[in-house]
Amino acid sequence: MTFEIPSYQRGYRWTRQQVKDLLEDVDTFESQPVPNSDEQTWYCLQPLVVKEDGEKFTVIDGQQRLTTIFIILKCLGHNQEDLFTISYQTRTESKDFLKQIAEKTQKDDTNIDYHFMLEAKVAIEEWKKNHENRVENLKDKLLYHCKVIWYPTDDNAYDVFKRLNSGKISLSNAELVKAVLLNQENFEGSSQEIRLRQLEMAGEWDRMEQQLHNNLFWYFVNPDPESVKYNATRIDFILEMWLKRELDKEAAKEAAKNKNKNKDSDKGNKKIDIDTELKNNAYYIFEKMSNKIKKPSDLKPIWQGLTNTFRTMKSWYDNREMYHYIGYLMNMKGQSKQNLLLDFLKDSRERTKEEFKQNIIRKIQKSIFGEKEKELNLADLTYGEDDKKIHDILLLFNLATTQNQISEQSRYPFDEHYKAAKKHWSLEHIHAQNERRKEFENKDVDKIRGYLKDTHKELSEYINKNNLKDRKTYNAVIGALMGAEVIGNKNNGFSSTFEKDDSLKNLALLQGDKNAAFNNKLYPEKKEMLAKWEDTSGKTLFVPICTRNVFFKHYSPNSTNPLFWDDAAGKEYLTAITETIANYIKVDRDTNEFIIKRKQEEK
Image (cartoon, rainbow, N blue to C red):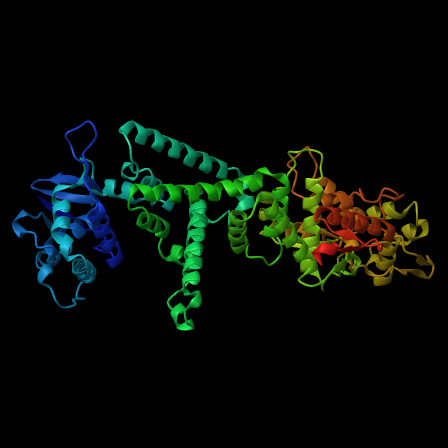
């Protein structure tokens, strides 16, 4: 046959690695009898889309493989007369170059196609050198045991080309791995037994994929749930975790072998950076999986490793207690979620369920106390100095509160938490601490007067949009709403004895965009905004449960004025944090009401 590559097609661009992959793939293929048939199985070289044009065929799709096969057969010494012919509409000299490629010995960069064609030849010659006893066998397989999917069309060739290549989506690792795993050559037994086993595995694969599309589970377990690499199929994430575990086990075995050797012997044991490999090679996992399955007995441990990786993470999700414990560790400030997850998977394999749980709790305690500290006074934590610790304490408080709810279905929404974290979690003062630097409108003044009219009537009557810009007057308003003493009168002006409060008892967790909206508003103003965000007549916005509780003073049952956030309310809030966390992570409370400390055996 004679094939012509039209001008709108790009030139030949296969790399050495792609050529080697094709050679290895065809070489490892073994034709087998088709059950209940006289036919033999064959290796598929994928589609070749063509349009017949007189005595030649215009190649619409498949020219890269077609050219590679031509070069391989030439380099394997196949007779020229029996080969098909390839010509190029705009690169006519390439036809003769290909015919003579087996004899080419020098680099030729006069045409970019020549460069890649010679690169392909180099890859083939290297393969021949390393597989001298299999060259004829490979040639035989290509000629007699390989087929293309022949796809002729009568439509306009260029229109077909555009349709085929517009938005073309490559197969993901998961789709290719699934094909490898379900390959009938990986099974033993009768055709019926093989079919049942394939159906069983395919069913479990689909159940895993379905569960991964539950966003509560997906955002809980995946450190990077919105990565575009999971757009095609989420099960690629499970394959990554499986491979990382496999390579970690292999590295541990290698380290054990070298334990008694001198230091120089470790120089060759370079750890593989899988994330970098995946960036450089979209099919890295597929290649590693293919290399691991050489015979039917190789399939079982690999399949078990995959399913166990998934089932372990699913068991954490199904157990609400473990869901919240592990969710806390995965969402602490400054943590490498990927490394933590791998550590948890390894730890769960080496311990009983109860041992694993106790170890998780110890890790949480360590995150609170640090390596050596025996106790922590929550009242000492200060905004601006201990922000990371305060963030983790408040996150833990929210998770513990959710866990303690009566409903067994109640779960902290890590999907909403992740989306909020993209805009950064912020520590929000329950009551404003700074002067409001803005122009006050009459409606703002009327609102503040309403807050103060029953408790500070003179101050309420005194304020207006001009004197509220004065630091002393505005501080008097803040002090009044914090229960501090207000000094002065309407003739001489007002001030307050209140002190700035940057302690934990005046802080709550809020996502960054909402924090900006609060913008140093007064406590009752923030409370009103929060109520609007949670208005059930529209779409409610995610606010952590304890942030909602504290602004609506659920921790201050003895408070008499719903518009005030005073020191007493703050202490009751801090008491609730201390009690809840101490009980949740199994530590003691000191006689000092805000101190938590490790139990004697945990010191």
